[in-house]
Image 1 (spheres, rainbow over the protein chains, first blue to last red):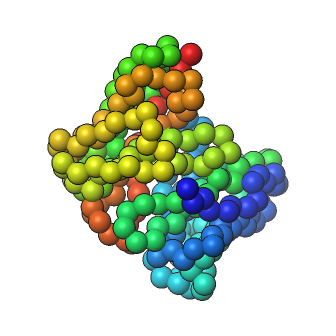
Image 2 (cartoon, one colour):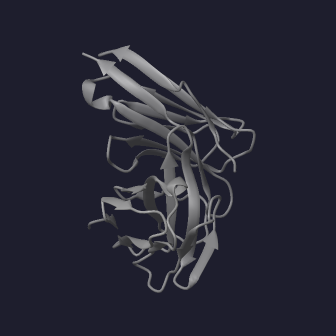
Length: 110
Length: 115
């Protein structure tokens, strides 16, 4: 099955630093979604992107739908301890199926 | 609204046992799906449904059955559990049955161990 390439796999950062992660694919997607997963919980939707080039913010989070439609980026500004978790990207082409990245594990050091 | 509700939260089975993982949503979503999450593998689609009475296979359907008799419920059945089915299972739903530009909402998961 198709998986998205998500990087980095893990990040250890100081509180207050900015974070960047990305997701790439060899296929074009029509929708990109970004999720955060806390331990023992299901993924929670952070940002949804529907158009190539779209830049969308949700508080300190900003995500972009790549121009080529084969990638997406998530930035977190001024990280805080509660940003700790695993971040997943998901892409949707036509129909219903979503394809997921393998996740970026974020650790924020106070 | 409760959103997507999964039960049980944890389950331990012996090899060969059967069980049903329950999933219910109260958002009147047409699309429902089951994923399994394994370390380093991301989320992999098991089965999905675009509406009551309609189901289809995803990426890893072997060993699992589903049915969709109502819009709200989408149970996942393991007929004869195997250790390879040890995983965390997530149910997810979205509003429309066949569409792009959708948002997928997840339940809190079921952690299954097969001994």
